[in-house]
Amino acid sequence: MLKIGLGRDFHRLTEGRRFLLGGIAIPAQLGELGHSDGDVLAHAVCDAILGAAALGDIGSLFPPLDPAWKDADSMELLRSAFSMVKQAGWHLVNIDCVVNCEEPKVLPFRDNIRQSLAAALEVPVDAVFVKGKTGEGLGPVGEGKAVEAVAVCLLTK
Ligand code: MG
Image (tube, rainbow, N blue to C red; front, side):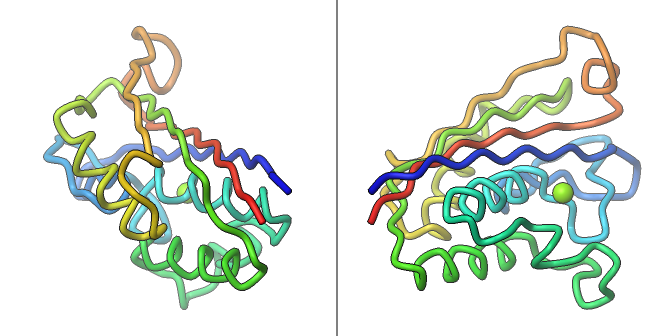
């Protein structure tokens, strides 16, 4: 059986925060605001795998109002979600992701991000892909006020 999953996340950008994508800290003027560490890509991937397995979503598993998740390492949340998915008998086939932001550029960090996500999800690097896009100057992404990530995944059992 195959199941597809979709995840999407959006974080406001602000000063004094790190800019994290899939556990990789990228040098940038602004970083992701969030109750956790704000890693928008880790959150989108988390929702994609949980959605495919029909096990919930990041908000229901790790509620943003729960102090336990304050400044949480989102890659830890992802590993925890993936272990639930594995326990339900699923194997990850692949994930494909898009990160939308004006700054910083994702491309120079793409391979690091792919390796980081692949390690957390226990798949080869060629099972993970990430593209960077801009907002063409339009909307909160284009104005550099926010970053968005979208992820799809395929699970099999
Ligand atoms: Mg989030």
